[in-house]
Length: 107
Image (cartoon, rainbow, N blue to C red; front, side, top):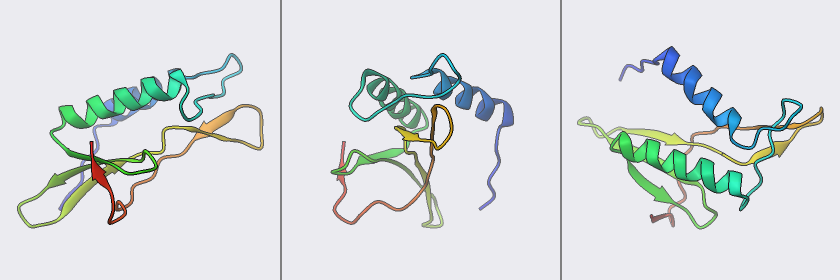
């Protein structure tokens, strides 16, 4: 399966994510259960729904979006949306894609 990336869409998406919880010095402060966390999670859920993905949220709040393909492969989208402290000034986010645990549950 070929993967194509819309560069402009990707850049705009990253810019928007960087605005939610942004600090004055260019860092990011988006801790779990904060208003910024709720805002970005709601946004991410809306993005996955708009793409028609099947969505699961596990017991830790990790969000996963799946698209079933004709050849029985799974396209995944997931993201760590909270801020992770950085050794330098401010903080940053991390993105990851992985399979959900076997005990994940639907939204």
